Image (cartoon, rainbow, N blue to C red; front, side):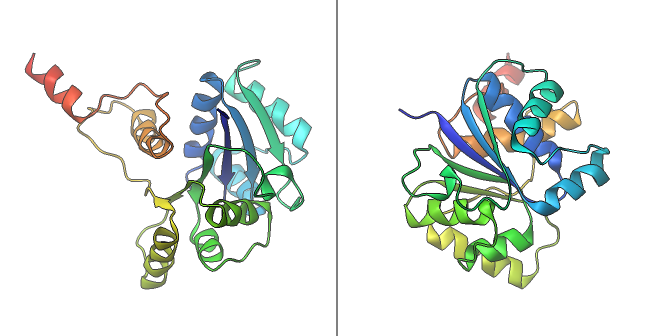
Length: 208
């Protein structure tokens, strides 16, 4: 069975979600195909003062160094404008695609079948092939237009996992809150690679 996953990173706030998703998937020895939208590079620099290189080979080395994961898993980075990349084809074997974080602009384009870059094309392919597509929108509040676009995606088969953490697992840090959202996102692809105290487990622990 393929252990390949596509991670799309759009220009929404919350780049920590993308960074920690990459970390966990590589540590779990998955093959991760990454495509970041043009706007995401600007957001990264604004949020974390991180200048991510756009050249695919240089970016792969950057992530390996930044995440301190030199060898585990396989990482393949794609240019946002390379609509002829492998992940743009319906024949590409993958467990599915996650767009994390997902901007409302990206939601709108995917929901209306517009493919102006590789991220949007890869997401469109997931829908047309009936493969898993998980959207992690990061916006608040949602306008009626946002809600209708998200509804369109849900009706087309996408899973919508808003970046909304829970508190029953007793989070002690921002990373705990972020990891909860990532774990629930990966649940949609039947991937369990994040140590997370789930609902019944937490109740049992509290009652012991």
